[in-house]
Length: 377
Image (cartoon, rainbow, N blue to C red):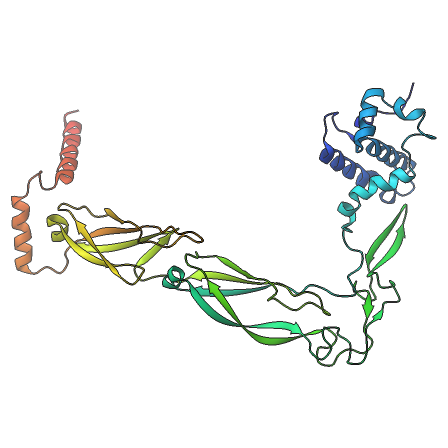
């Protein structure tokens, strides 16, 4: 009977743990018991071998199924000289988390020193009308472009970059640390794999120079504040002939003298006189398409009431639909009254009753009852 510790207990996981939990547990324990982190500690080396053996079995679907059914006996006989040990299995297990521990994924070589250019950002403000109609615009931006003198190689005309002797053109060098051989960026060529002995005088060996570039862009109808437009390949040129980056144009909308935008809807506040609110009437308001529309208000309109005008809002991006326009009336209290106007309003107040101002009358009736109840209590 095997005296080995249960693999699940070794990795400190449940038997129902999925692959992601197994990998996370192995990574945590491998970092804790790695011999390089515990020099001279025989116990840590033993534990490190145990967790590696456990993970080597449990990460493999077939091996895990066999282990769940037969336990350690599944690997003690007929397994070709022992079960999962610390030899080849160690490399395959640890490679699963090697990129997580040391960030080495996809770092082998740099394609002859070619690096993708950086992405650029351009902030552009447009008016609400331009967002409504769409716009074709031209912008000028300083960008890095491929150097014509060296065709982007960074080397002086008539010469070529040479393979880095330190890394052999790989862009990476290896260094032994304990049980592992780690890779790091080559300090000689900074990971490019090539060395330039005679740099191009026009670009100082960068393979690119800065120029002003004029670009044409199309702003579609219905763009909102914060909309991002991507122009592929219009960013900085790549280093030594590498692919260019992208240009991202971020749009912001200037404030409007009449409208406030809410998605595809537009809101407009219109002040009206007390008389117009009381008697009713109509007035014209501008629309975003440079037209106008008539708004009719009934008698007795209260301040803050909104009127909807269908399909007079903003176009919805990449669709044929359009939002609505909402007109909110705000009743303006008269100011700077003449003596005659004051007398007329006072006379109107005497003639008024609860029927003309039901909300105010109802409120003050409740106030009167409230104070009356307090006086009698």
